Length: 256
Image 1 (cartoon, rainbow, N blue to C red):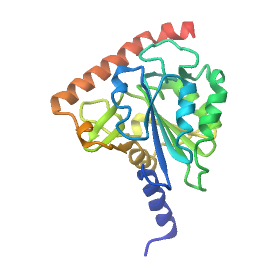
Image 2 (cartoon, helix red, strand yellow; image 1 turned 135 degrees about the horizontal axis):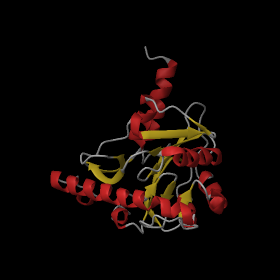
Image 3 (cartoon, one colour; image 1 turned 30 degrees about the vertical axis):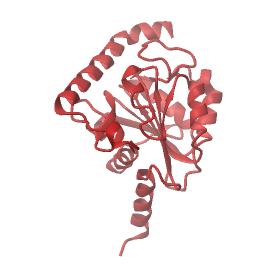
Image 4 (spheres, one colour; image 1 turned 90 degrees about the horizontal axis):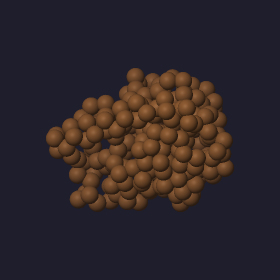
């Protein structure tokens, strides 16, 4: 006989995995000014391109009652791009930065309002998919601040490089991928916060993130997994892009 707690967990996991169901919606917003991400826009009805935080708020409003929101953009510790392309410098209205969230407080409130009320013990997920967004004290500061603005929502981010693409046949996935094989999210590469406090990243949370981080494609032709050489090339390009931003990060902080 299945216990009540086990049954509740299975129901919650099923809801997070069911991207197209009426009961639970998943939406991915990608920075369409980043050429590495722009090609993923439109491969599913709930993958939308954005060019600013205000645009993200407008697109988020098109899918009310969501349980999961993925924001994908170029990143560094404590910042994710939402219309700034690959720029390492903070741009007001185009980035989420741990030091400048007050610049977009109204837009964030609008995005938070598009989430469904989360049942007790089944928090929503806000996934920030950008290289090293959650790394270091700046990354943790961004997550804890955001988690205060998104009630009963776990905010997660990687501490290493990321990729977005059809690494699983028939799906677009937001992956933590320090290698060329589309590795999914793992405990040692992920940080999380809820209600203003860091939360442990355990196997159960990782399972929920991995279930939620892939969206079924509407066209199999547009969503073929890359070949081995394409994977290696994509991983090398992503690693180089992340390294470029990391090298530029001190200049960005001086100008911030």
